Length: 201
Image (tube, rainbow, N blue to C red):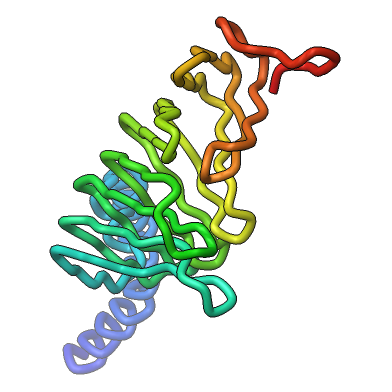
C-alpha cells in the first residue's frame, strides 16, 4: 500500500509543477519588464548603436570642386563619424580660406565649432562665426550654413555686416556668396548706401 501511495504523490506533484512554474513566471516577468522600462541606462544599453569614430589633430585639408581647389580648412581637432549620415566634426575651432578662380584668397571664415555633412555637401557653423572678405567687409552671426556646391552662406539667425560705408543687420538672417560680394538680407536695418532706382540688398 505504501509503494502505491508514493507514486501517486509523485504523480500529483508532477501534475502541479507546470502550473506552479506558470504562476512564478506571471509574477516575476512583469517585474523584469517594468525594471527595464523604467531604467534609462538599461534601455540605452539595449538600443544604442555602435559607431566608428576617427580622430585627427592639427588638420589641414583642401576642398576641391570639379578639380579646382575652392578652400583650405585648418583645425586643431577633427572627429569623423561613420553613421547613417557620414559627418566630420570640428569641436575646437576652425579656420577656412576661400579661393577665387585664380587661387587667390578672397575671403576667410572663423568659427568655434563646425560639422561637415558629407551626403549634403554642407557645413554647419556655430559660436562666434565670422567671415571677412578682401575688401574688409565683416559678417558676424551665431550660426551659419555653408553650401559647398553653390558656394553660398545662409542663415535664419540675426546677422550683422560691417564695412567701410555700411553697417547692416539682417534680423532674420541672410543669404550671401562666400566672397560677400552679393548679400541678400532678411528684414535689414542700419545705414547703407542705395543706388538710385534700386532696392537695398
